[in-house]
Image (tube, rainbow, N blue to C red; front, top):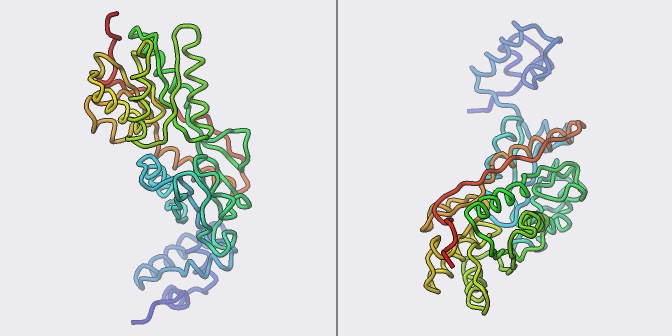
Amino acid sequence: MTRPTSRDVARAAGVSQATVSLVLGGKWHGRVSERTAGLVRDAADTLGYRPNLAARNLRLGSTRTALLVVPALTNEFFARVHTGAARVAAAHGFGVVLYPSPDGTGPARDPFASARAALDGVIASSMAADALEAIGGDTLPLVMLDSDPAAGGSAHVNLAIADGMHQVTGHLLGLGHRNFLHLASAVDTWTFHVRAAALAAALGPHARLRTVRSPLAVQAARAALEEALAAPGDRPTAVVCDDDILAAGACKAARRLGLRVPEDLSVTGFDDLALATAVEPELTTVHLPAEQVGEQGMTALLAVLDGRPWTAPDLPVELVVRDSTAPPPAP
Protein backbone atom coordinates (compact mmCIF):
# COMPACT_ATOMS: atom_id res chain seq x y z
CA MET A 1 0.00 0.00 0.00
CA THR A 2 1.46 3.34 -1.08
CA ARG A 3 1.81 6.15 1.40
CA PRO A 4 -0.68 9.00 0.78
CA THR A 5 0.80 12.28 -0.41
CA SER A 6 -0.21 15.92 -0.03
CA ARG A 7 -1.51 15.72 -3.59
CA ASP A 8 -3.89 12.93 -2.51
CA VAL A 9 -5.11 15.06 0.39
CA ALA A 10 -5.60 18.05 -1.90
CA ARG A 11 -7.60 15.96 -4.37
CA ALA A 12 -9.78 14.49 -1.61
CA ALA A 13 -10.46 17.89 -0.04
CA GLY A 14 -10.94 19.65 -3.38
CA VAL A 15 -8.20 22.21 -2.72
CA SER A 16 -4.68 22.99 -3.94
CA GLN A 17 -1.51 21.44 -2.53
CA ALA A 18 -0.50 24.91 -1.35
CA THR A 19 -3.66 25.05 0.76
CA VAL A 20 -2.86 21.63 2.23
CA SER A 21 0.62 22.86 3.18
CA LEU A 22 -0.81 25.98 4.84
CA VAL A 23 -3.36 24.05 6.88
CA LEU A 24 -1.15 21.17 7.99
CA GLY A 25 1.72 23.56 8.66
CA GLY A 26 -0.50 25.62 10.99
CA LYS A 27 -0.18 28.78 8.87
CA TRP A 28 -3.71 28.96 7.48
CA HIS A 29 -5.25 31.51 9.87
CA GLY A 30 -6.36 34.57 7.91
CA ARG A 31 -5.54 32.88 4.61
CA VAL A 32 -7.92 29.89 4.52
CA SER A 33 -11.47 29.62 5.87
CA GLU A 34 -12.32 27.48 8.90
CA ARG A 35 -14.47 25.29 6.65
CA THR A 36 -11.65 24.65 4.16
CA ALA A 37 -9.16 23.96 6.97
CA GLY A 38 -11.60 21.41 8.38
CA LEU A 39 -11.96 19.70 5.00
CA VAL A 40 -8.18 19.40 4.69
CA ARG A 41 -7.76 17.97 8.20
CA ASP A 42 -10.61 15.51 7.69
CA ALA A 43 -9.14 14.35 4.37
CA ALA A 44 -5.69 13.92 5.94
CA ASP A 45 -7.17 11.91 8.83
CA THR A 46 -9.22 9.71 6.50
CA LEU A 47 -6.23 8.97 4.27
CA GLY A 48 -3.84 8.53 7.19
CA TYR A 49 -1.57 11.23 5.77
CA ARG A 50 1.48 12.33 7.77
CA PRO A 51 3.72 15.20 6.58
CA ASN A 52 7.30 14.38 5.63
CA LEU A 53 8.90 16.28 8.51
CA ALA A 54 12.43 15.56 7.34
CA ALA A 55 11.78 17.14 3.94
CA ARG A 56 9.96 20.09 5.49
CA ASN A 57 12.75 20.74 7.97
CA LEU A 58 15.36 20.51 5.24
CA ARG A 59 13.53 23.24 3.32
CA LEU A 60 13.32 25.38 6.44
CA GLY A 61 17.00 24.85 7.32
CA SER A 62 16.04 23.34 10.67
CA THR A 63 16.12 19.84 12.11
CA ARG A 64 13.91 20.73 15.12
CA THR A 65 16.34 18.81 17.28
CA ALA A 66 17.94 19.88 20.56
CA LEU A 67 20.93 18.23 22.21
CA LEU A 68 20.81 17.75 25.99
CA VAL A 69 24.34 17.35 27.35
CA VAL A 70 24.58 15.76 30.81
CA PRO A 71 27.47 14.34 32.84
CA ALA A 72 26.08 10.81 33.15
CA LEU A 73 23.02 8.74 32.26
CA THR A 74 23.27 6.82 35.52
CA ASN A 75 22.38 9.90 37.61
CA GLU A 76 18.65 9.97 38.27
CA PHE A 77 18.59 13.77 38.45
CA PHE A 78 19.60 14.13 34.80
CA ALA A 79 17.16 11.45 33.71
CA ARG A 80 14.41 13.61 35.22
CA VAL A 81 15.81 16.71 33.49
CA HIS A 82 15.54 14.85 30.17
CA THR A 83 11.93 13.88 30.93
CA GLY A 84 10.97 17.51 31.44
CA ALA A 85 12.85 18.77 28.38
CA ALA A 86 11.40 16.06 26.14
CA ARG A 87 7.86 16.84 27.31
CA VAL A 88 8.10 20.50 26.28
CA ALA A 89 9.99 19.64 23.09
CA ALA A 90 7.31 17.17 21.95
CA ALA A 91 4.60 19.78 22.47
CA HIS A 92 6.45 22.03 20.00
CA GLY A 93 7.37 19.42 17.41
CA PHE A 94 10.97 19.09 18.59
CA GLY A 95 13.05 16.07 19.52
CA VAL A 96 15.70 15.88 22.24
CA VAL A 97 18.91 13.88 21.76
CA LEU A 98 20.49 12.93 25.10
CA TYR A 99 24.28 12.97 25.14
CA PRO A 100 26.25 11.97 28.25
CA SER A 101 29.78 13.23 28.70
CA PRO A 102 31.98 10.13 29.18
CA ASP A 103 33.69 9.76 32.55
CA GLY A 104 31.22 12.11 34.19
CA THR A 105 32.56 15.59 33.53
CA GLY A 106 35.47 15.19 31.09
CA PRO A 107 35.74 16.11 27.40
CA ALA A 108 33.51 14.15 25.06
CA ARG A 109 33.94 12.73 21.57
CA ASP A 110 31.92 14.49 18.86
CA PRO A 111 28.93 12.22 18.07
CA PHE A 112 28.10 14.22 14.94
CA ALA A 113 30.03 14.85 11.75
CA SER A 114 28.86 18.45 12.09
CA ALA A 115 26.87 19.48 15.14
CA ARG A 116 25.67 22.61 13.41
CA ALA A 117 24.19 20.55 10.58
CA ALA A 118 22.44 18.15 12.95
CA LEU A 119 21.11 20.41 15.69
CA ASP A 120 19.13 23.59 16.26
CA GLY A 121 20.45 24.20 19.76
CA VAL A 122 22.02 22.78 22.91
CA ILE A 123 20.91 22.50 26.54
CA ALA A 124 23.82 21.66 28.82
CA SER A 125 24.43 21.03 32.49
CA SER A 126 27.38 22.98 33.85
CA MET A 127 28.77 19.65 35.08
CA ALA A 128 29.17 18.59 31.44
CA ALA A 129 30.36 21.95 30.09
CA ASP A 130 33.69 20.51 28.91
CA ALA A 131 31.81 18.42 26.36
CA LEU A 132 30.54 21.50 24.52
CA GLU A 133 33.81 22.34 22.84
CA ALA A 134 34.25 18.78 21.58
CA ILE A 135 30.84 18.70 19.89
CA GLY A 136 30.89 22.26 18.62
CA GLY A 137 27.94 23.04 20.84
CA ASP A 138 29.39 26.37 21.94
CA THR A 139 28.74 27.75 18.46
CA LEU A 140 25.00 26.91 18.61
CA PRO A 141 22.19 28.57 20.59
CA LEU A 142 23.03 27.40 24.10
CA VAL A 143 21.02 27.16 27.31
CA MET A 144 23.08 26.43 30.41
CA LEU A 145 21.55 24.61 33.38
CA ASP A 146 22.69 25.11 36.97
CA SER A 147 25.54 27.38 35.94
CA ASP A 148 27.12 30.77 36.60
CA PRO A 149 24.75 33.43 35.21
CA ALA A 150 27.80 35.54 34.31
CA ALA A 151 29.28 32.76 32.16
CA GLY A 152 28.64 32.15 28.45
CA GLY A 153 25.42 30.89 26.94
CA SER A 154 22.34 32.33 25.28
CA ALA A 155 20.21 31.74 28.39
CA HIS A 156 20.47 30.22 31.87
CA VAL A 157 18.14 28.10 34.00
CA ASN A 158 19.13 27.89 37.65
CA LEU A 159 17.92 26.46 40.93
CA ALA A 160 17.92 28.37 44.21
CA ILE A 161 20.92 26.32 45.36
CA ALA A 162 22.17 28.80 47.97
CA ASP A 163 18.71 28.98 49.55
CA GLY A 164 18.66 25.18 49.75
CA MET A 165 21.89 25.17 51.72
CA HIS A 166 20.55 27.95 53.96
CA GLN A 167 17.51 25.76 54.70
CA VAL A 168 19.83 22.87 55.65
CA THR A 169 21.93 24.98 58.00
CA GLY A 170 18.87 26.64 59.57
CA HIS A 171 17.44 23.19 60.31
CA LEU A 172 20.66 21.87 61.86
CA LEU A 173 21.42 25.01 63.86
CA GLY A 174 17.85 24.91 65.14
CA LEU A 175 18.45 21.38 66.39
CA GLY A 176 21.48 22.64 68.33
CA HIS A 177 24.40 21.56 66.15
CA ARG A 178 27.54 23.68 66.32
CA ASN A 179 30.25 21.35 64.98
CA PHE A 180 29.88 20.68 61.25
CA LEU A 181 31.70 18.75 58.56
CA HIS A 182 31.04 19.52 54.90
CA LEU A 183 31.41 16.39 52.74
CA ALA A 184 31.94 18.28 49.50
CA SER A 185 31.99 17.10 45.91
CA ALA A 186 35.43 16.98 44.33
CA VAL A 187 33.90 18.09 41.01
CA ASP A 188 35.07 21.63 40.24
CA THR A 189 31.86 23.25 39.05
CA TRP A 190 29.75 26.31 39.83
CA THR A 191 26.89 24.57 41.60
CA PHE A 192 29.21 22.98 44.18
CA HIS A 193 31.08 26.25 44.70
CA VAL A 194 27.74 27.90 45.50
CA ARG A 195 26.89 25.18 48.03
CA ALA A 196 30.21 25.59 49.83
CA ALA A 197 29.98 29.39 49.92
CA ALA A 198 26.37 29.33 51.14
CA LEU A 199 27.18 26.83 53.90
CA ALA A 200 30.14 28.84 55.17
CA ALA A 201 28.17 32.09 55.07
CA ALA A 202 25.16 30.61 56.85
CA LEU A 203 27.23 29.13 59.66
CA GLY A 204 29.47 32.17 60.04
CA PRO A 205 30.67 32.59 63.62
CA HIS A 206 27.88 30.38 64.98
CA ALA A 207 29.62 27.04 64.42
CA ARG A 208 32.83 25.25 63.50
CA LEU A 209 33.15 23.98 59.93
CA ARG A 210 35.60 21.54 58.39
CA THR A 211 35.54 20.49 54.72
CA VAL A 212 36.45 17.11 53.23
CA ARG A 213 36.20 16.46 49.48
CA SER A 214 35.18 13.24 47.76
CA PRO A 215 34.40 11.97 44.25
CA LEU A 216 30.68 11.50 43.59
CA ALA A 217 30.56 7.83 44.54
CA VAL A 218 29.22 6.04 47.62
CA GLN A 219 32.37 4.09 48.43
CA ALA A 220 34.65 7.09 47.89
CA ALA A 221 32.47 9.15 50.22
CA ARG A 222 32.49 6.36 52.81
CA ALA A 223 36.29 6.20 52.77
CA ALA A 224 36.71 9.99 52.94
CA LEU A 225 34.36 10.39 55.88
CA GLU A 226 35.74 7.37 57.74
CA GLU A 227 39.16 8.96 57.65
CA ALA A 228 37.78 12.34 58.73
CA LEU A 229 35.77 10.94 61.65
CA ALA A 230 38.69 8.83 62.85
CA ALA A 231 41.01 11.86 62.97
CA PRO A 232 41.95 13.24 66.41
CA GLY A 233 39.98 16.16 67.80
CA ASP A 234 36.34 16.89 68.40
CA ARG A 235 34.09 14.80 66.20
CA PRO A 236 31.48 16.76 64.21
CA THR A 237 27.87 16.22 65.18
CA ALA A 238 26.47 17.04 61.71
CA VAL A 239 27.69 16.13 58.23
CA VAL A 240 26.35 18.29 55.39
CA CYS A 241 26.75 16.52 52.05
CA ASP A 242 26.71 18.07 48.57
CA ASP A 243 24.36 15.38 47.28
CA ASP A 244 22.51 12.22 48.29
CA ILE A 245 25.17 9.88 46.90
CA LEU A 246 27.75 11.40 49.24
CA ALA A 247 25.24 11.25 52.09
CA ALA A 248 24.71 7.52 51.53
CA GLY A 249 28.47 7.05 51.80
CA ALA A 250 28.51 9.12 54.97
CA CYS A 251 25.88 6.88 56.58
CA LYS A 252 27.95 3.79 55.68
CA ALA A 253 31.04 5.39 57.24
CA ALA A 254 29.18 6.13 60.46
CA ARG A 255 27.96 2.54 60.76
CA ARG A 256 31.45 1.13 60.16
CA LEU A 257 32.74 3.29 63.01
CA GLY A 258 29.95 2.22 65.36
CA LEU A 259 28.12 5.55 65.21
CA ARG A 260 24.34 5.81 65.03
CA VAL A 261 22.58 8.12 62.56
CA PRO A 262 21.07 10.40 63.77
CA GLU A 263 21.65 9.77 67.50
CA ASP A 264 25.43 10.26 67.28
CA LEU A 265 25.74 11.96 63.90
CA SER A 266 23.21 13.85 61.78
CA VAL A 267 23.61 13.57 58.00
CA THR A 268 21.98 15.67 55.27
CA GLY A 269 21.93 15.23 51.50
CA PHE A 270 21.03 17.33 48.48
CA ASP A 271 18.92 16.47 45.36
CA ASP A 272 16.25 14.17 46.89
CA LEU A 273 16.97 11.20 44.64
CA ALA A 274 15.15 7.88 45.07
CA LEU A 275 18.24 6.87 47.04
CA ALA A 276 17.20 9.28 49.80
CA THR A 277 14.31 7.03 50.84
CA ALA A 278 16.05 3.75 49.98
CA VAL A 279 18.67 4.09 52.74
CA GLU A 280 18.07 3.68 56.47
CA PRO A 281 17.53 6.03 58.07
CA GLU A 282 15.87 7.97 55.27
CA LEU A 283 17.77 11.12 54.39
CA THR A 284 16.95 14.68 55.28
CA THR A 285 17.74 16.36 51.98
CA VAL A 286 16.95 19.26 49.65
CA HIS A 287 14.42 18.47 46.95
CA LEU A 288 15.40 19.81 43.51
CA PRO A 289 12.62 19.98 40.87
CA ALA A 290 14.63 18.24 38.14
CA GLU A 291 11.78 17.90 35.64
CA GLN A 292 11.07 21.62 35.92
CA VAL A 293 14.74 22.29 35.16
CA GLY A 294 14.34 20.34 31.92
CA GLU A 295 11.04 22.02 31.08
CA GLN A 296 12.49 25.49 31.61
CA GLY A 297 15.65 24.57 29.73
CA MET A 298 13.69 23.58 26.62
CA THR A 299 11.34 26.56 26.98
CA ALA A 300 14.35 28.87 27.17
CA LEU A 301 15.88 27.31 24.06
CA LEU A 302 12.63 27.75 22.13
CA ALA A 303 12.60 31.42 23.16
CA VAL A 304 16.19 31.89 21.99
CA LEU A 305 15.44 30.21 18.67
CA ASP A 306 12.46 32.56 18.21
CA GLY A 307 14.64 35.59 18.97
CA ARG A 308 12.84 36.32 22.23
CA PRO A 309 14.67 37.30 25.44
CA TRP A 310 14.63 34.77 28.26
CA THR A 311 14.50 35.70 31.92
CA ALA A 312 13.15 33.68 34.82
CA PRO A 313 13.73 33.56 38.58
CA ASP A 314 15.67 30.67 40.06
CA LEU A 315 13.52 27.60 40.59
CA PRO A 316 12.67 27.19 44.30
CA VAL A 317 13.98 24.21 46.25
CA GLU A 318 12.67 22.68 49.47
CA LEU A 319 14.21 20.98 52.47
CA VAL A 320 12.61 17.59 53.16
CA VAL A 321 13.17 16.58 56.79
CA ARG A 322 13.35 12.83 57.35
CA ASP A 323 15.05 10.56 59.88
CA SER A 324 18.77 11.24 59.39
CA THR A 325 18.83 14.42 61.51
CA ALA A 326 18.24 14.96 65.22
CA PRO A 327 19.65 17.10 68.05
CA PRO A 328 23.35 16.48 68.76
CA PRO A 329 24.31 13.99 71.47
CA ALA A 330 24.80 15.37 74.96
CA PRO A 331 28.44 16.32 75.73
